[in-house]
Amino acid sequence: MLIITNRKINKGSFKGGVGDHEAFGDEVNAKGPNEVRLANAEKVDGRWRVRLIKEPGIITEKNVPSRKAFAQVRDHLTANGKNCVFFVHGFNQSFEKNLEKSLALEKEHDVEVIAFSWPSNPGGFKTKEYRFAKRTARASVGALDSTLEKLCGYLQEPFNREALQRCDIKVSLLTYSLGNYLFQNYVTDAIYENETGVFDNVVLCQADVDNEGHAAWVDSIAVGKRVYITINENDWVLKWSDANFQKDRLGNTARNLDSRKAFYFDFTDGPGVGKTHGLFYKKTNKVVKTFFSTVLNGGRGERIAGLVFDAQLNAYRF
Figure 1 (cartoon, one colour):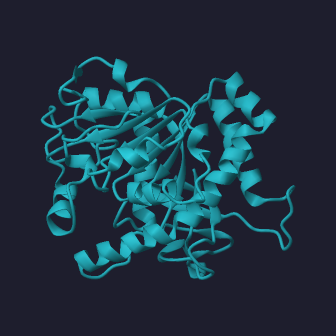
Figure 2 (cartoon, one colour; figure 1 turned 60 degrees about the vertical axis):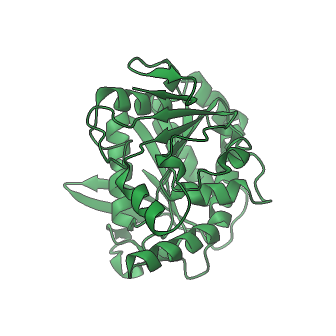
Figure 3 (tube, helix red, strand yellow; figure 1 turned 30 degrees about the vertical axis):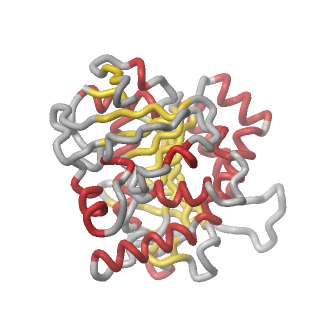
């Protein structure tokens, strides 16, 4: 999988150009939070192998590392007929945890992942760590913007667009937990120029953002087809966030679901759901799995069997 990150490079973990699960740390890049590096990662015999993509001494339009990296992803997608998910993780994720969740996402839903990895695990007392992670999320907006700006450009280039369309390849965005806070700050920043319009679906999974007023920024998200928001009122992670810090969280509140653009899916009390936060990769039930497999592969989640639309709630539910 392709990793795009503004984490600090742990040069000591690289031997012969190959690093492991500690290749990137829990601090921002030494050159600042807007400095982004690319790497390819794969798990071989139970161990992660991470290869940092080298940057030329002088970068020109023809030798931009991200252009070559995306061309490799495009070729893999077209050769294997897989769809692609751009994944933004949440709070308290080391680089290794991010790799493992990305791999789980690939296996569970048969997609290729491009992971945006930001330093969300600063360490220390949990409440202080959470506040620090939110500051880092805000500081990472520039890195996410430059990443999506390039990805948007590559996807819209005629050769890439025609190759992906020929194989009917879908590209979607999944933002998870506190990753939605980073995404919200990006969408509401003046630098946002509708780059997300290249994604077939945008999935705001168990969003650790305010429920109050969310429609204002959600409705401003540019998207090729649809925006989906998932809810579990019993989500244990968001209950902690809700109790310790702030207002009702979007991902665990089945009220005020008033976005004109988004489709809401309330999985509360579904078989096996319980207090699950990681709905997209944890084992719960067939309907939840089918929903995520459908929307992450560019399909319509509102058409799957097992859910009904509750007009009063404005959400699909069991």
